[in-house]
Image (cartoon, rainbow, N blue to C red):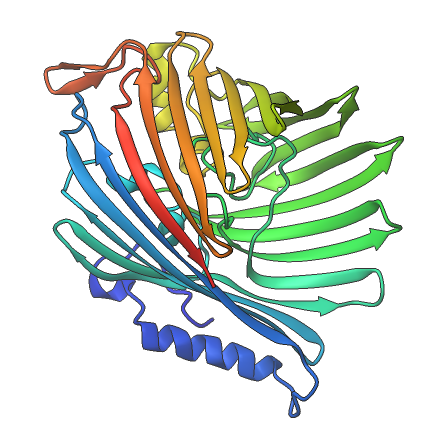
Length: 417
């Protein structure tokens, strides 16, 4: 298959030149494109994200500044029996070696997403302090199988999350809960078959081969899912294999008075040990001074997480973390977000993400301004509150889960066209 070489190889053999990648895409489209394309709809769009950061000094990293740029082009259109979805992006990271920089956000890691089966991306240029990468984040074809079913094959976004920040039952590409840039969910290589029975009931099967971990181990995710609505409540269950091991989950969402209730729970087999992972959340909008205040509260209990500070390193090196299934390292985590519309063009937000075991948390205020209909400016910060890490013979010892996070300030410009 085009571009499906083993990503574990180092050096030039790991890189896939842009010209060859575009040729692969052209071959795919050529095979799906009919002789006559008259009357077919298509559309190009794109975005540019620019982030500048300043990271304060900490035990784990010196103070430094960094920059991150992402340019993305997207196209959707019909080609005979298939609907095509295409997104190609370049990212440029500028930083000093050994510092956090823009890599603090998952937006910066989008082109280096773990788990890709097809090597549709890679390094274009990497030198000290500069990393230029590219990636096809979408490259899929959707086929209608009658009035009530479709099949999507290729790199595509798949989300089974019910809660908003802490999503333990999303087995594909969950967001970092602290990431302020969530415009695009990372695409995964999969085949997705969906059957719609009525307006509220859906069945689907997803098969996803992947390469995970530093050694690029090959795994298979094969899951079946059913969702429906009963009495105003959305219900969902899924089960099967997640990276070659057993997984099952259930979700529920609806309203309790003026509050929206969202909850999800999963059972996973990690190293021959069944663990239970679950999140419950509430969210509601309050009118204050003629503006909307949106509040989200979530609590997660994750038996795959660290039970004590001594277990944090083990959690960070675990199979669950390497497979991208862990968003946080702790066993008991809380999240609180407040978002307030100060003006039709200006909004403020504050995120608290913390460990309920050691009382440490990350505080992340932000302010957004809609410059034009297609452009927005954002300024924000993150800082950790709690006991800081220390060095013991060059080995870091964590005093708390979030206390070692340094002061972090960023500005960003996001432009859509």
